Length: 496
Length: 30
Image 1 (spheres, rainbow over the protein chains, first blue to last red):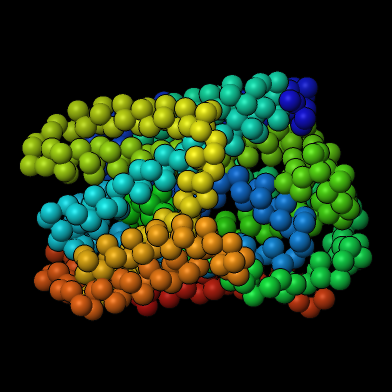
Image 2 (image 1 turned 90 degrees about the vertical axis):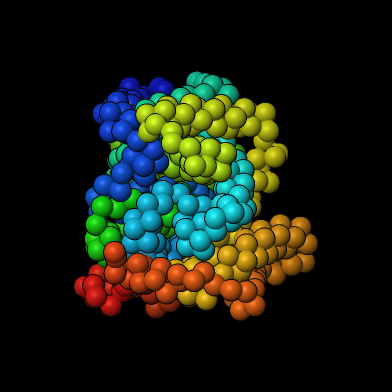
C-alpha cells in the first residue's frame, strides 16, 4: 500500500537509494578492520572517536518512536509531550560525562567487551553466575527488539513503496544484515553516525519549513491556542503521566546497545565533549519532533485529516506536502535510519551474548580460540540471530509485541540500578546485582499486568526504584568483592 | 504563555547550556 507516494517520485526514490548506497558502502569499507578480532568486531577495538560515539549512542537509543511516536504524541496532546524527551536527554547527559566514563575506564582496564563481561569482572564472579543471569534477558530482549525494528521497517517500506509488509521486512533486514555482518561494531557506529545526520536533518528542516509556510511561529502558537485550553500548557498532564514520561530515561543506563557505545571510545576523557555533542543532537532531534507534531496540528487541525486518522502519520504527511520530493525522500530515509541504527546495534549485542558470553567465556572457558575463528563465528551468529528476528517479525507479531513492551523499560530496570550502583558504590555485591536484575524484571511484568497499577504510573518507574532498593538491601547483607576499592580507582581513571 | 515558551525554548536551551558547563568542568566529573 503505497500511501506516501515515494515510488511515484524519482527525486524521493533517488534520496532513499542514496541512503541505502551509503549504508552498503560503510559495510564494505569496514569489513577488513572488523575481521581482526572479536574485540574489533564487537567493540571496534575501543578506537571510536568522540563525534562517532556521540551520534551512535544517541541514535541507537532512538528508534522510529522519536520521529513517528513523539511527533504523533505532540500532535495529539500538545506541549506536554515535551516531557517524554526531557528524561532520557538528561539521563544520557549524565551517562556520557560520568557513568559512561567510569564504565569505559574500568572495562578498558579489564579488557571487557560486553556488559556481562563487565558484571563478571566488577564482582570477581568466577562461577559465571552473573554472566548467565545477564546474558539470557539480553539475548531474548535484544532479539525481540531487532525483530520489532525489522517489522517497523517492513511497515514503513510498504507504506512508501509498492512492496508487501513481508518484502519490506526482508529489505530492511537485508540492508542491516549486510553492513552489520561484514563491518561489525565499526560499521554499526559509522552507519549510526550517518543515520544521525539524516535524522537531525529531517527533524530540523521539516518543522522549520512547515512553520515558515504556515506563517511563522507566532501565528502557529495563536492557532494552537484555540484547539483546547490545555494544548499549549506543558503541565496539562497528571503527575503519574509526568513521572511516566520522565521515567523513559530510566531505560538508558540498562540498555546494553547504548552502554557499549561509551565503552568503545578511544580516549575516555573525550566523553565530556562527546556528552555535549550527544546532548545537542538529542535536544535538537527531540524538540524537532515535538515541533513537527505542533506544526502538523496547526495545519491539519484534527487526526481525522491524517491518513488512517492516526496522529503518528503526521510526520510523513507533513514531509510529503511541504518539502521538495528529494527532501521528502530524505525524511523517509530518516525513518529507516532511526530503525536501522537501533536494529544493527541491538543485533550486535544479541550476537555478542552468544559468542562472547555464552561460547567464549562459559562453554569454551579456558580454551584458546583463534581470533579469526571467533570473528567468523560472530558473523555466523549475527546472521543466525537476524534470521530468527526476521522469522519472528513475519510470524510472531503478538510475542514480539509483549517482549518489546518490556524491553526498553525492563532492561533499564533490571540492569540500570545494578550497573549504576556498581560504578559508584563499593559496597555493591554480586548477590545485590542479581537481586536487582530479578526484582527489576519481575516488577516490570507484574506491574504491567495489574491494570490499576499500570493506570497510576508506568511500570518501568516502580520497577527501576524497587530494583535499586533490592541492590542496596541485599548488598548490605552480603560481602563485596575484596578488590572493590581498587576497582573504583580504575573507574576514576587511576589505571595500572 | 510563559510556560509554553519555557517548555519549547528555554528548557532545551538550558539543557544544552548545562551540557556545555559540565563539559568545561572536566576534572569534576570523574
